Amino acid sequence: MSLRPPAFSYTARGALHCESVPIESLARRYGTPLYVYSAAMVRARLKAFATAFHSSPHTICYSVKANSTLAILRLIAKERAGFDVVSGGELERVLRSSPKAASKVVFSGVGKTAQEMELALRSGILLFNVESASELNLLAATATRLKKRARIAVRVNPDVPAKTHPYISTGLHQHKFGVPIPESKNLYAEAATSPYLEVAGVSVHIGSQITDVATFQSALDRAADLVGSLRQQGHNIRYVDAGGGLGINYEGMQDNFEKQIASYARAVLKALRGLNVHLLLEPGRSIVGPAGVLLTRVLYRKTNHSKRFLIVDAAMNDLLRPSLYGAYHEIIPVSGRSRETETTDIVGPICETGDFFARDRKLPVANEGELLAILDAGAYGAVLASNYNTRGRPAEVLVDGARSKLIRRRESLQDQLSREKL
Ligand SMILES: *Cc1c(COP(=O)(O)O)cnc(C)c1O
Image (cartoon, rainbow, N blue to C red; front, side, top):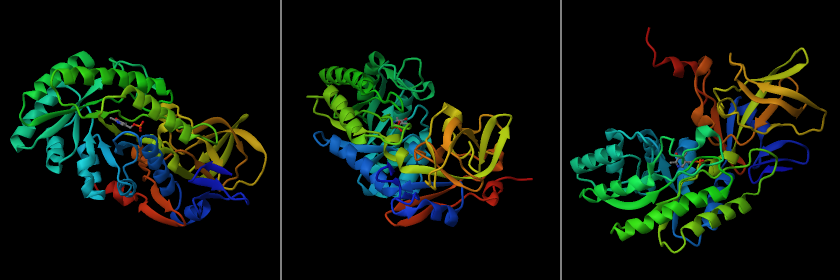
């Protein structure tokens, strides 16, 4: 059975594979908890974006914060994509994994420091997405000091509600992100007076895990109006950065990404029809989310009165999404042999009630020592890992066809203690 084609499937004998590699062999070789990523899935998702947007000049700037492991960035750079970064650290990762990608980098974020701007200016990035008047002033001063021109877009806040979790909705006026559209016009006018700033685009990003494409269209309709009025004022707007945020289907065994990406592209391109701009897209989750699983082993079975628990060796420090957002992840046994089901909580060893992966989940009965795979963990998984409870962050493996490669070794206790002093 194919679960997340072309990445994860069960063989006829019920063994879960990542591409052609048995997942069980990865657990034996690299230990658990373990992130396992499929290169084929990442390539397929990038290709689906390129196909859906082929009628418009565009650049995919993969959002590094979704998964910033160097080997993942290199894989994406090899497919000729660019990057969206939100910190100097993320830019350093891009430069290390693919030095030539700098010219396809956009820099977003509400709190850029002078030092981060300097690194971006020296690297020759494509575009700064400016999020306030104060940031614009600092960028002008920094660019003037270095005598480097900065291409800018203002990230506007279109004031449209995105139907998603409140923590990852960003396009309402009460959120910290972007500049209200009326006010943005003053920023563009201001920017045009600086010889080291080049007004180049309009940027909008309204949140994450958005599945209703009409929301993107309303935001971009407003961005398109702004492009029109800025051009009337004499600004040379060549780029529209449509942000990221396309949701994935966490629930259920199948998704239909081809259809979803096609309707997303229709919504975006409809809003921008006739504008003749170069489109920038910043997908993160939709590229890497379904490409990864978190592999974990059942440590103990436990029953409190009638409540059943599976205590597994992964925890909220490895994958925070269920605890942070109440997010749903499919969880499946690595051995797909048929058996009875039971209703159980799947929890980690951390001393927090919030340390859970699933509650009251119907699952095939799993024995102690068995392996489970938590699906769709490729985005906002490893990047959000921490050392809570002095747990080392998990190892990460990239599978490509029949090969697997350790792309991040498991964090040792020594790694954790080495920066401390007594
Ligand atoms: C987080 C973020 C993205 C990526 O969002 P996804 O939901 O992962 O696609 C894109 N652009 C900006 C500015 C972001 O902050």
